[in-house]
Image 1 (cartoon, rainbow, N blue to C red):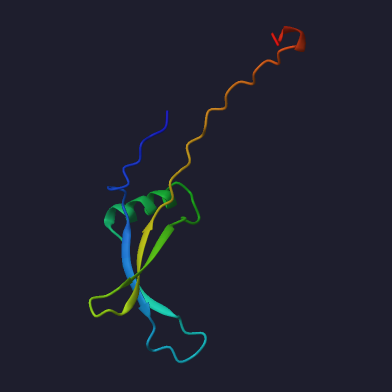
Image 2 (cartoon, helix red, strand yellow):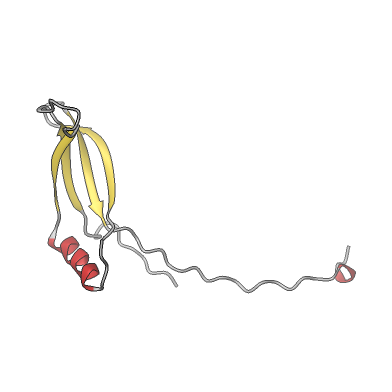
Length: 103
């Protein structure tokens, strides 16, 4: 049986990034901004490190939006990826000999 995930209450970090108006060289970032991580997400990340993981994978989602002044920005959401539940593999079916097929 797979566990239901409550996406509404899954801990997520959120933030925004705007076009970098101070970019003067090609090695400067195109966008800058910030992301705030809630305590619940930080705890989840720390727990993974305590379990022996050398690194923690995060999932990011990005939407193009406009701020109150109409300037383009990127809205960012960060969370941990969902763990895929192992699927139960059905037992292979026995082959029916042609002589037993009714047609």
